[in-house]
Amino acid sequence: MQEIEAKKQLKASEGAHFFYTLIFLSASGIIETQFIEQKCNQNLQLFVHLVFYGLIIWGTYILITLIPRYKNAAINLFFNFLDICFGIYIGLLLFFGGRMYMASNDCLAEAPALYFFLETFLLVNGIIFAILFLAFVSYVLKRFSKSQQVYDEGKDEFYDA
Image (tube, rainbow, N blue to C red; front, top):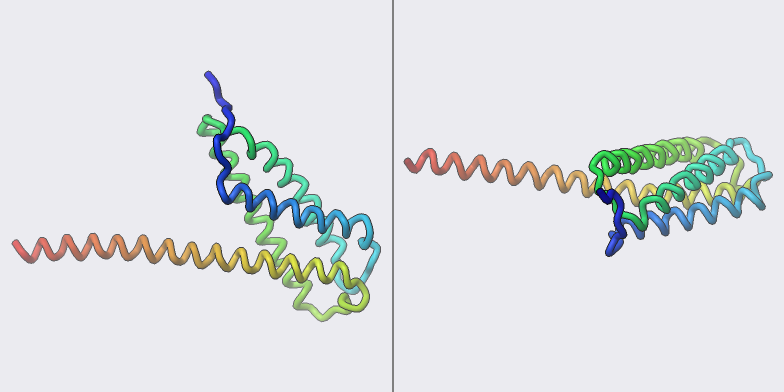
């Protein structure tokens, strides 16, 4: 039985994940090679390391799942689990970076490249998480309105009889 076949078309989310990973992996790689020795009173080097190595692992995952399509339900469930784990990882990085950004620091003057990377990461991922949160709220409200509509229609039929 053939468990793997070629994908006929990529989803928009797969392309977005690929370019997101490519952009932030390139940026963190440049910072790792040229600017990582900059120091300030926050541990921005740890943040850049976490982003860089996390995106290397995520980029490997994307390459594994980009071209082939897996028919096995257990493999697809596992890959969906990894998607959720990466979302949680980025959310935790967003929280960690936000705490460093909000704390009083001298990083703008002492480590401008690392600080700019932190600001860019927070801005881009903050917008992405805000959009995902609004989509989730919209989905919940849509589901609630449909169930309320079905309930109201059933109630009208009950009173008409």
